[in-house]
Length: 236
Image (tube, rainbow, N blue to C red; front, side, top):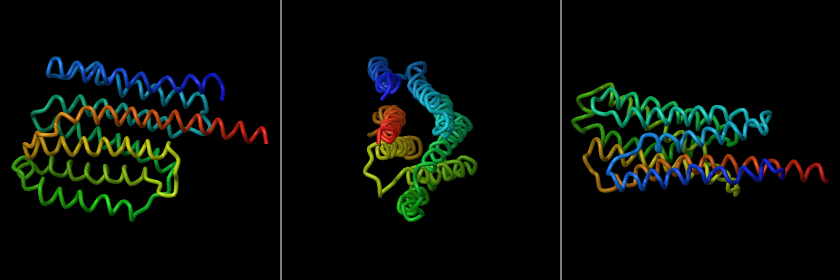
């Protein structure tokens, strides 16, 4: 492991420290600091680009992952501008593109399983059609309802694409845990916005930050693992 790889281990601590600062600010002032909130995903973007430059030939999908973080930042900014509903649609659209990026990155590493996708999607579709769609906000806004539907589908696809049941590698499961965090966070957002159920809303931002931190951590650990594997190969 070279000095560069050793130094990479330090980088996930940066968004972690920023997330802690953002949460302290939120608790102290009862609002989000947009600069702190955006800097968490931004530092994760920088980590992906850094790892790409260390080993560009094997990590081109990291540029897509970096773009996904940027769309995530935009999505968060748009959602914080609501109402009116078109800001919410723009936010959902940005997060939709973020999930496309997460999915693309996953599919370069994991064989997609339609069975896992169905197992995740079906309960969420039941929740969408039986619980969310009848709410006044979605029932009276077809564009918003369709945007939420597409987002439910892409979120479930993103999570299922990250799951590799045949692997015991921590890098896979840390990434999956990150996607699961954003899916749970989004579920709490939907409950708060459409059902007016706010009991778990305090978990939205911690889960959102944790999503990005875990994804960045998985990227760093994967790079270190690849470097160690290639070094061992040269020694054999």
